[in-house]
Image (cartoon, rainbow, N blue to C red; front, side, top):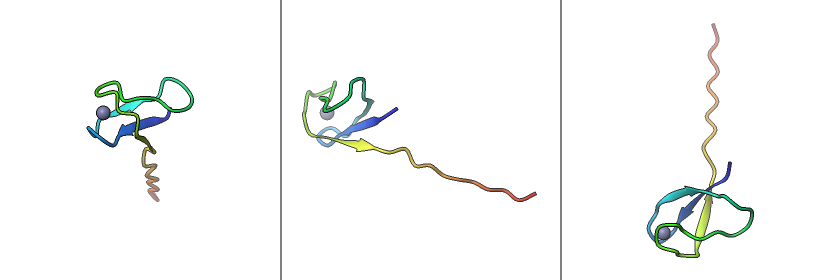
Length: 45
Ligand SMILES: [Zn+2]
């Protein structure tokens, strides 16, 4: 699932639709995609 972050209020929200979405909190239209950091932890046992 793609997450978005509003550049105005900084809140993160899930993208419900494909394409541009608006911030549900302040209706700001400039948002950025947030990629969840994939941290690979390899443990050798
Ligand atoms: Zn916002």
